[in-house]
Length: 326
Ligand code: SF4
Image (cartoon, rainbow, N blue to C red; front, side, top):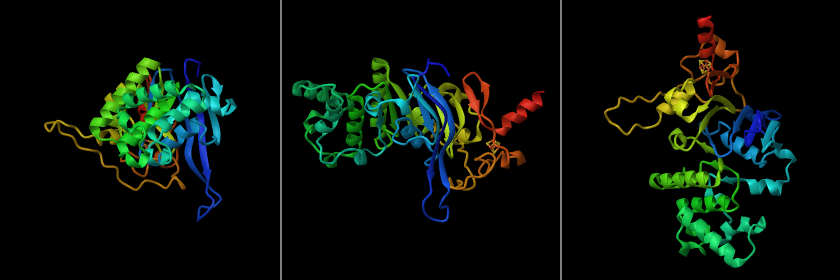
């Protein structure tokens, strides 16, 4: 990978030790060998079902967890070598649960102003008030709520406070962890449009984590699909929606509702239980739920293969296709 990327992740691993229960003294492999890169000003959508490790990837990038293995480079420098305070100015996060991430003892204006003060970006009260007011306007919170506390706001407004807080320091990179999942559909579109406007205006780079592929379709340049801690498919957003290859990606895409009643749309139902991440299956992790599974899928881990320009997939179906061509 070259320095054309703002964020480069190489073979990232995040294992959590299991300290109690029948799996004691083993490891939960939340992320197991994930690699990707994001160019400045672009958005990587990270999708998969709950528990696939996507949130752990985001948090490990920001050093909220120290990685078990692999490398995370930001602007060509390993994040583990960077000063954590400087890192926080450049990399921010918008959390999934706004209520848990906002200090209940601080007002809206104090929450948004805090990063500006802590990072020494603004010091004069009038400048801080002006910036906080602008940020409140931008994310759609009425200024009369400046002195309200998180418990006085509904979930949508609380999340907008979280977004304003992340944007306040003008970071280069933001990990957006399901930032719109708690909002009404109409508000989701507003917030997504705002985030894209910010990206154009300030050249922001996003990692957008979601379980909902329809949310990332328009905001993402590239999309990575994760299953049980591993990447199964990665492609440009356009390519992934036009030509999904992995059976798991096809199932996720088929779950997106189609608004046109004349279109014959049949969601692909995944059969079988989701394997325990404490004891994942051998071979392809998806083989217990895949209707195309072959004998080799039960024992051989599929390699990530480039099957097109900017399109990679890890599935034995495409090994066989290559062999057939020979
Ligand atoms: Fe299905 Fe086999 Fe492909 Fe895994 S490798 S997704 S089990 S066909």
